[in-house]
Length: 198
Image (cartoon, rainbow, N blue to C red; front, side):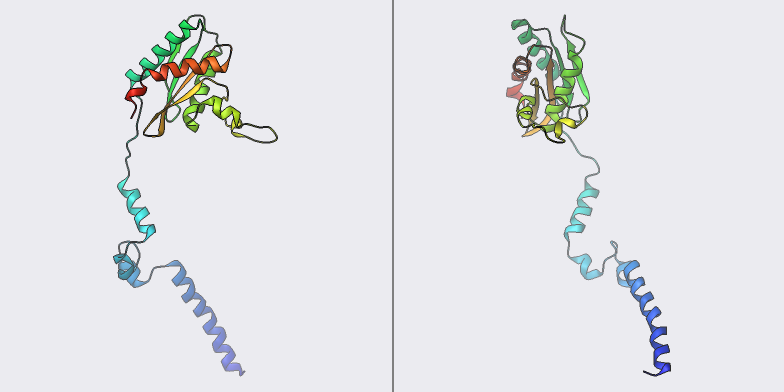
């Protein structure tokens, strides 16, 4: 290899590197003229990335199903009637899909802890879309579990309200001496509107 050739390779090396760097960082002229930074041929055929980008742009606002205030009141009233029938002093809490409290009914004589336990049961039921009694069966020790998630409570008494197969709210009952009684009361409340849930 001659000295002049070596100089040319060294000189060409950084230039080639700059060309590669430019190709990696910047669009080509054809890509720059394309509205999405792609060549005309690529722009004419949709790709999964384009479809995702287009669908995100089209869905800037989404509609979500919510439990009506009237239905929440009916659930709470039916639950409190069942609690009275069973001679239980409970609190009923209903939360929406995001876990925000929609309604609290604290029965006469219900203890101070009942509101928080009912709220956490309702939150847990809507978060996982299953009754808290079912979720509790799946817990086991030996390491972190879903029970470590803040705000959850895996005692019976929380049931999801579902519409179209998805949870839209959660009903939690706290105050009876067992989770089974709390859940029976919550389910009695849910039964009041079950035929009108889509």
